[in-house]
Amino acid sequence: MRHAKKGHRVISMDILEHLQKLYPALTKKQKTIADYLIANPEEISYITLAQLSHQTGTSELTLLRFCQKLGLNGYNEFKYQLRHELKQMKEPVFSPNDLISHSLALFRDNMEAVDADKLKRIADYLTGDNPVYIYGSNLSSVPAKYLQVVLNTLDHPSILIEWHRLLAGLIHEITSDSVLFMISAHGDSQRYLPIFECAKKRGITTILLTSEKNSPLLSLSTIWMCSNDQNEECHHVDINSRLGIITLIQLIIELAAQGTIKENS
Image (cartoon, rainbow, N blue to C red):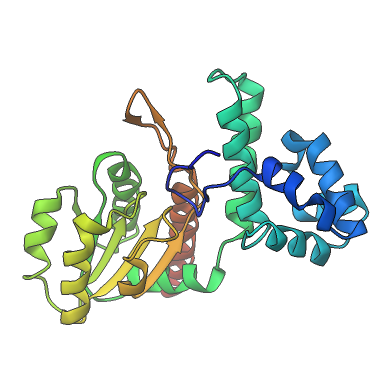
């Protein structure tokens, strides 16, 4: 039994192995789903809930209950877990088509999980009259810089911070009406917890984009959004694509741009 890396809520279990143990206790419809899963694990890891419902001849509600039977919160979590296990079972070399299918599936899942109301609230905060600070370090500095440049171009000035020590000092100095927008793919709680605790105590608005759904930073954030980016390493180098985070930022930018057009019309 393998233990999955942190990122999404990927749990310490083997779906196919666990399913074989549960099989005798499954209902007739659940066995139909289980049989299809065992025969087509690769396909299921990339298709939508509606597509699987059609393929198995079962309702979406039955499929969701099947996921819960496996101890998972829902279909997206089921697919994350299944992809992780299949990846562990494969050789570490993927064809271009495999990589494209994987990225498209992650993108689709990310879009399906987007909270439009949260996106609008974030865009409003970033285009308001209060000071805006955008933070992203290492690879996360790339989407952070992109957001900052576009906001400045839209005439919504913001300050980019790329160093943890600088942010740790500034959080005590910036005005309490400020907005702190942070991108942290891994939701590093030990590193950023004191910053978020200070921000909350001072009444500073905090917006967090992360791919770590279990991060303690979520409860300290004014608004948070989680992408479905998977934390991956190659020779101990972080190669997390941040595709989901970049997608969320692009949506925020487009909402900000629409707001700017309305203001100037």
